[in-house]
Image (cartoon, rainbow, N blue to C red; front, side, top):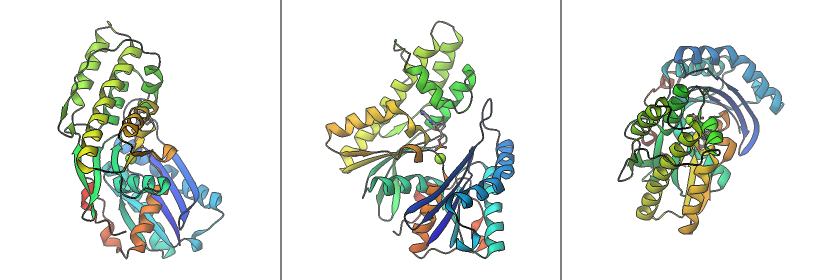
Length: 323
Ligand code: AMP
Ligand code: MG
């Protein structure tokens, strides 16, 4: 069964094509604004690139629409204008070519691609992206949230710090590079409540420290990473101890960060637990959407066009996991 997935919840237009469990195409077009993401401009970017991206993915896989058995798209969570643009494109293709359509949860897609590539069974999941920061584990047919941010997502904190300090969006990778040159740890608010976290205090404090001109940007980047990643590692370790998982999966865009991977890998080694991160598939992509759509379709999930309305606040634990 050949599944085409369309990702477009925010900054990335991703088109993925998979044949059962084989990746045939992975096309990504990324909107990189000077400052933060402007929802309407991001949506404009998605619509301008939609046809080009679909054509490239078909070319990459040597297929055309008559070969496609299923069209899936990210139904939420995400930015309203982006979600509506992506859903409109997916519906148009489905109706025109008479191919079944499925709207999928973006966060669950991030999890499933990690489980698939890592051949994981039942991992504890640390999902860290721009808007989301969650610790999850499958229980009674749902990815239950055992801990999450109480305010902003960690990626959002990094990107906002970048905006205040002149780093182009997305700031996460730039902060990672600058942090390698940092030498002095500057204390920042470390806020962990059980398995929940808060990042807005780090942002305010780091921005104020930057504006005071008393600290170097490199030292601040280093300190932001050490503080926030220690918080993530602490809550993951706490959840691991309670839930007794045998595997840890790191997924979502911030999962690309080598320092975060290093901290988690070390913690997992101490607990004799397998650690996995899907590397380039941590970031938003269409392959994860194609995969989740396929898993849902094979478990008997079907949707009509009227079921494909976007869900801006679609929670990870709203989805029944039937596979
Ligand atoms: P996603 O929406 O899942 O693609 O995640 C996007 C977020 O990941 C943005 O906030 C980026 O700044 C962040 N990000 C991407 N690469 C890195 C990195 N190497 N280190 C830290 N954050 C990153
Ligand atoms: Mg994402």
